[in-house]
Image (tube, rainbow, N blue to C red; front, side, top):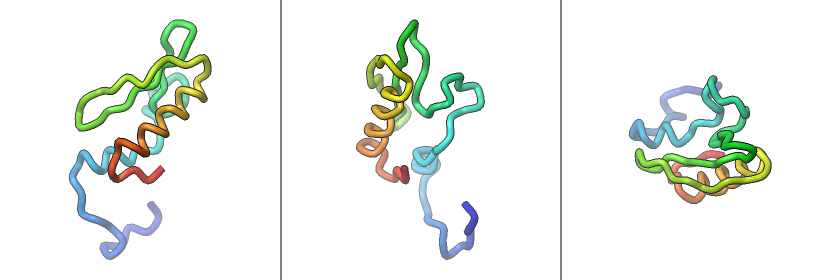
Length: 81
């Protein structure tokens, strides 16, 4: 982020650039990327090529986030996390 020289940037599609999201949206109440509350448990979801993929329900938000990160590394070709 701090070195945006043309020689340091790569050409990519908007969808590929969106895969590099590192922070949650401002309305995310759990504070973790890919995690939402579902009753007393936490749900993990990820978007792949515009389609949302359900990753499961977990007892803790941290477990749901770990599942999200694992799926992100496998499913997002340009993942930088």
